[in-house]
Structures are given as structure tokens and as C-alpha cells.
Length: 95
Image (cartoon, rainbow, N blue to C red; front, side, top):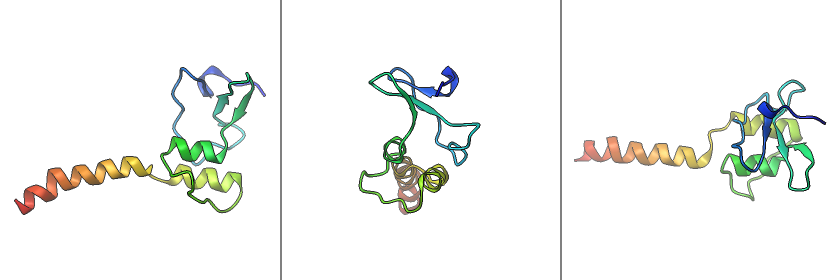
């Protein structure tokens, strides 16, 4: 499997955005492994990239899991948004 530098993630490059179409034959994002091989991300790696806890369970196969992760809002990002809303809006309303 060959990877275009545009579509790959290596130790010195950020990973691309995980999308629902990330596992289609035309838009797979590759990762360069420590052993020199190039592969697609595993679901466990995608969960880490999106800040899901390691024990988060995805049902279905690999493509369904990728789609579910791609459709989701990363938990740590949503936490930051909720905290900002609480601080910048709700605390001022209670004021």
C-alpha cells in the first residue's frame, strides 16, 4: 500500500480530520508505523485521536466504527465548549 504525503500521518505530522468518509477507497488516511510500514488507522487509534476513552465501545464493523467516530464531536472538544458556555454566558446571567 502506498500513501501520498498529503494523506499520511507520521510522527512529525498531525493526523488529518477523521471524517465519515475516511475509510472509503478514495480517501483513506494512512499512518506510518514505527516499524516502517504504512497502514490505515485502527478503531482504537481513531478513538485516541478523537479523545474517546480507551474503554469506549463501538458496535459494528470497522467501516461503521469509523463512520460513528467521524460523525461524533470529540469529547474533550465538547467539554471545552461546555465550560466556555458556562463561564462566558451562564455565570454572567446568574451574575
